[in-house]
Length: 258
Image 1 (spheres, rainbow, N blue to C red):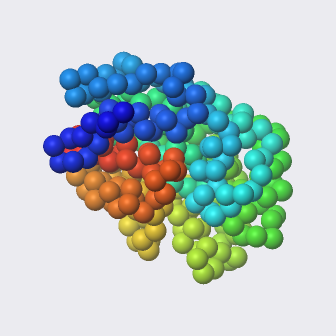
Image 2: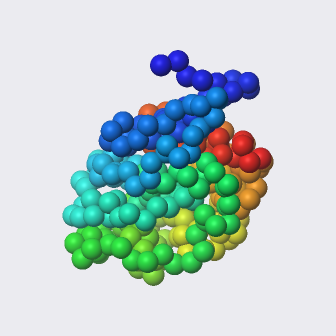
Image 3: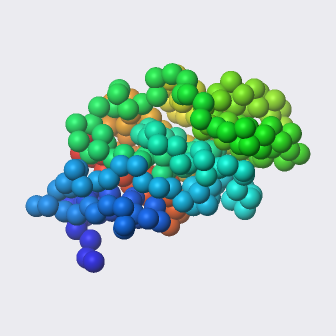
């Protein structure tokens, strides 16, 4: 199929939406999204997609460089939770497919209503918590950062914070930037969004930081500023990955609302 493009040469929002949904293995059977007079028909964008656990795990481990780590027990239970997220940082334990409902992004975009406002409810199982505790004692500090990220994604923000605190002294060199990104993601998820945005602004440029700066600006109502960071994230992130697809979708939303 020949992609539709906007006058500035960028793919249309319809094409970007199709691409994002295509990162979900059952997207073709679950929904149909197509252009109508050059626009997306939001009522055709289905919510509640089934997320393939292995694909979600690959994206959840990429921010800490542990892409080959085995999928933990009951990870599928976490990714199958029905609650949708909208303002998703690129951080350990998170995955782009957490954006399960595209309606609020594509119609009457209200950033204040879509960003986190406080500690999320806990959704992790006992099996997943056991995995987190085991990984929190890993010799590799990257494994500890992943444990903190999974705890945060499961809503156990207090445990996530404790693991990060314990791991801080071990995270030197390149891992220091990863630790800082995880700390900012925890601030974001607990509703301290302005603090998280300031933390990302102070960090050295990495693809994850670029993504998160743009995401934060978009959901803090600064769409025009979000565009530059998201465009750089799109260039830096692997094109075949889910984070690239979500960056493109956020960029399209920023362009429409900026």
